[in-house]
Length: 320
Image (cartoon, rainbow, N blue to C red; front, side, top):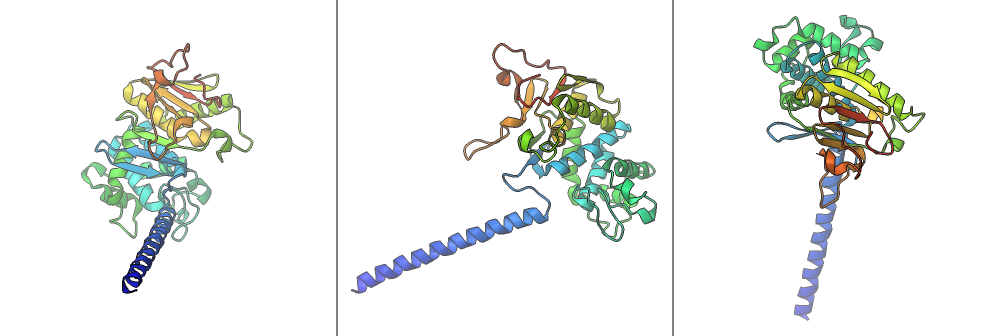
C-alpha cells in the first residue's frame, strides 16, 4: 500500500509540475505579446519588416515604421547630406515617436519628431505630414555642426528634449536603416505583408495596378529627388535606371518598405527578386527574403534586366 501511495503522490506531483510549467509558459507568452504591443513592435504573424545590419544584427519594425524611416532617410540623400545626418534623424524619430506619425504627445507635440506648433515648427496639420516634419528637422540639423557631435548631442541640439540622453540607444538600428535606404548593402530589407487584396491600404477602393505604379514613381521622385537616376512607369511597373548599385538598392529597398501602402507585389534588381507572395515561413523554413530572379521567372519568360529596378504592382504576381 505504501508503495502504491508513494507512486500516486509522485504522479500527482508530476501532474502539478506540468500544469505549473504550462501556466508559466502561457503567462510568458502573454507578457511577450503585451510588451511587443506596448513597444510598437509587430508580433509573429503580423505584417512586419526586418533590416539586417552589416554586423548581422536583425531589427524588426512595423510596415508603418519602415515606411516612415524610408521618408526620413531618403530626404537626407535628396539634400546631399551624408549618412550620419540620416542616422541622427532616424534615432531622433525612433526616440520621439517610435517612427510613428502620432497626433499626440507632450503638451502640443505631434508627428514623427514630436515637433510643437507653439515652438515655431509649423501648424499641427503641417507637422503631421511626415515629409514636412522631416524637412523641418533637417533644416535645423544643417545649422548644427553635427559631425563634431555624438548622435545624442546632435539630436538634442535640434530637439531640446527633456530627456537629452535617450537618443544614443537607437544609433545602431538607425545606421542599419540608413544603410538600407542609401543602398550601402544589397538585399538588407525584407517585409512580410498581407496579400494585396486584404491589405488595409489597397483592399478598399484600391486603384488599378497601373495607377499604383504611377504612385510609386511619384513617391520615389518625391522622396529621393533626382538622386537615383531615371524613374518611369511601364504598364503595371515602375522602372528605375539607377546611377549606380547604391542607387539601385536604395530604390529597391524603398519599394519593399512602401509595398504595403502602394500595393507593390514584386521588386527585382541585380539578379534578385523580392516576391510579396513568397514571404511566408513555416516551423522548418525561414522567410525567403530576396531570391534569385532566374529561379522565380516562369520557364520561357525573360528575367527582368539586372541593371534596372523593376517594381511591379501586378496582382497576378507574374513578372512585368
